[in-house]
Image (cartoon, rainbow, N blue to C red; front, side, top):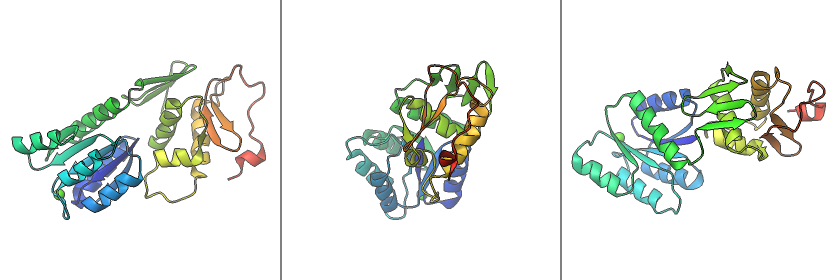
Length: 239
Ligand code: CA
């Protein structure tokens, strides 16, 4: 899940970015309206958090531009302008939610999750064989055992689970789980997949994360357990 935070006040932008990243989301920030519009047109965001008072334009103008797209991401307005008029105007112009500053991060996070749920009719509990992912509580279990994942590991697993049975390229995974500050190689995906495998697959006979030669990775329950302990050929391990 990738979120764009449009906020010119660096302190708030940093606070939001840290909090949302801690909750496992990929976060980009735009400090003015023009940058926000540019980002929204070039990237497929799952949610936009929008401040209204921006240095170059009114946030509502940004909202207008988002809504002019056929399928735009949900937008949550974040503003110190808490007057009823402002709220009504924002919601009338197509915002999906409105949060007045100052706010508690837990409240923001609860609303972010609600909005992402709304935009995503997919079930909140994802399952492949005996592996379950609770996207709301961010809890992963396999065979009745709780598994702790780092935020990026969780992000990759959730993305794969939502696309189970579908091969995903490293680029797709990076674009979905990392923000644009990351300009490294897609090989990072291999590193994370190794971590994920060690946590969710290695101890179990049924291997769920599949390497798809020439493409990337996919999660799917195989027909039968692997007969031999998995040792990826050198070519596939190469980074
Ligand atoms: Ca502002």
